[in-house]
Length: 178
Image (cartoon, rainbow, N blue to C red):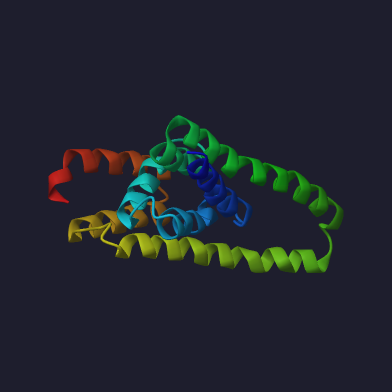
């Protein structure tokens, strides 16, 4: 049991400490740990956990850590996962914020932050593509729902919370169709 808890801690500590850009940027790192390194979940199970976690309020990393930790090692696993996901990031934010305040006008720091933004976008895009191509969208109807949701958020400026709630209702109502 201690080895399992240690592995839960390592998985979420690594994904937390190495993710620049917050929770969404940590998704590919969490997936690598949970699916790839430890094999706790399949790609489909990870996608389901991510979908369920995104329907709840709050940051994604602690929710995913709690979900995975609970499934791997019960309540204690959930606690260890959340601590591993939150504490390193909290320490890093405090230390980096202090440094950023000191060096915020430095051209190299500005350049570093400017270059990091597109990298975060690429990581998010890679996670989305990966989730869509691993049998997580089993029918054309699911692709249509995804396209409509994307269009509603990007072009019609519909609140993403409304899209999420609508998706839950559609999935619940028409589950057998997908």
